[in-house]
Image 1: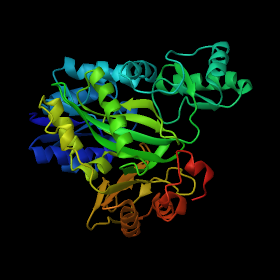
Image 2: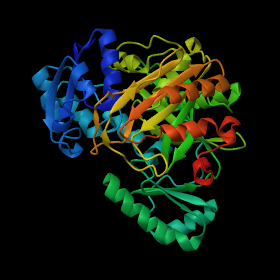
Image 3: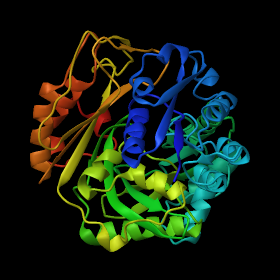
Length: 445
């Protein structure tokens, strides 16, 4: 087992990893930008190293500075969390070359599964269903028009790298295709450094359902059930729940088996997520794989009792999985609300000083956050400042528990998305399961 882990991240995920390390008896090193010196993860870690100025490119994305910090602190492993360098194959390779364990999959796995085009090719060979589309980059309008005609409209153009809606265009007619292709390629190049895009059939009313997997270096792979992440705005998740309330046991088993098969086919040996689109007729299609721990992992932990961060660390240390598939049981229902420092009406960032802070508590209530009273939410980083997770026996009970917890969650001095979540939990369509990924685009909350 590692003696000291450097956490190459900030905010709530850095705090989450530090807590797991402490429970495992592992010392921790926090890295921080100069404006993050007062951050909670810095005070909770055993030691800390400043790695640069506020801009992420000069601090949390600065590979040389992070590796230097690991050498200075004598850390033998680096946990990247999510975002930043968590899916950067080059960084994983540099860690290996420097004799530091990267807590995540291999660089080869990240390149293979992080690129959506190669991932489509890989999962198809493993027997995972995909939407009709291309398994290579589309570069010309003429090529795109022919492909779309064969697939049938509407189609969606997707960047092969990255996510978050950049390089993504939905097209309903041949006339709109050339311009949409050019825009998607431009956005992909600007956002991810490569203009590669592909085209696939657009699924109009899907749910976003993802399977959490665990793998070790001994060839064992299991899944921990699924999460429903359909409540999104601008392709960014806002609410996640486990299990998916519309899945049958048979469909759960089938989706899980496909996810495990895909992971085994590439020798995957860490935590990861296979993401699917679930159509209204029960058909499901591979969308992408996330080769890291995800923001929403706590809902899976709540219904399975498995500590995903600890298992990720154990796997990186070469230990065998402690669980077999038959050990995994889904118990109750969990819901997570992402708490963002944003105007709840416009969803625009709202940084500033927190002048009053109180976290909710009670049975089945969990808060993952790095916030505290008088903390200043910085404008330089992602606007998510916490996650509120509840667990109860049924979905209805979980919604009621979330309502109580949201009412108790007090954050003064800045605007947050708490009012949005309070409205959503009282929305009849949400409570009656009448929603998909486009719900917030057509529904006034």
